[in-house]
Length: 112
Length: 111
Image 1 (cartoon, rainbow over the protein chains, first blue to last red):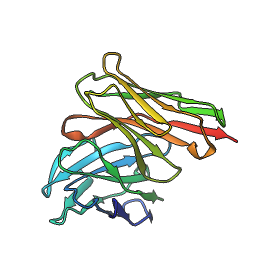
Image 2 (cartoon, each protein chain N blue to C red; image 1 turned 120 degrees about the horizontal axis):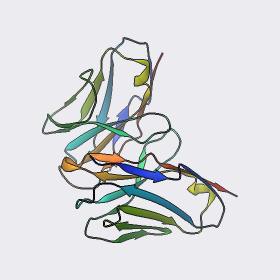
Image 3 (cartoon, rainbow over the protein chains, first blue to last red; image 1 turned 60 degrees about the vertical axis):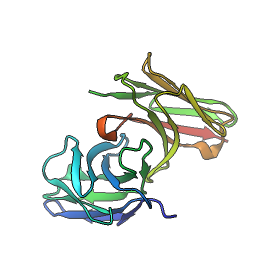
Image 4 (cartoon, one colour; image 1 turned 135 degrees about the vertical axis):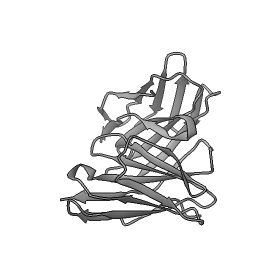
């Protein structure tokens, strides 16, 4: 049973560019959340998708957008990249409002 | 607004010593609490989930307690090993089960 998977593992982009990160949830899970973790800090909630709709959103600008597909996989898009967007981006999945969340290995984004 | 705090930010102990990691939160609402382990540059591994109706949860050498009245949770790791070196994070779900994380405690167990 595959856990949560994310791609790519690492990514280097230039300021102003756009990036797309991908996540496949754990088998049987239908809810995907995205988190941003800056170096030395705890993860910060970006948004959550359920039934292909954004259900909840954290305090992030509109440059951060997402999508969920019918197979429950999800994408995180970030436009007009800033140096401050450099972070580890984590995807978590769960079954609807079940309490325990399972995290993927993350995508390390570096913006130069 | 839910806030989660972990003190200390870093901890160094000799092998064999018991570890005590603290987590405090401001919202005493009926929510669970989850402890995670994170190795450098890696994702999060769930260690223990304490249901809101529970006072503690145990798994092997790990024991976590939850005291909603004081807004605290404690993670105990018995007989620490060098392989326990990692960052430990606590998190509480808010409405809709978005997680609010503490800043983590970075643990180093010296052989």
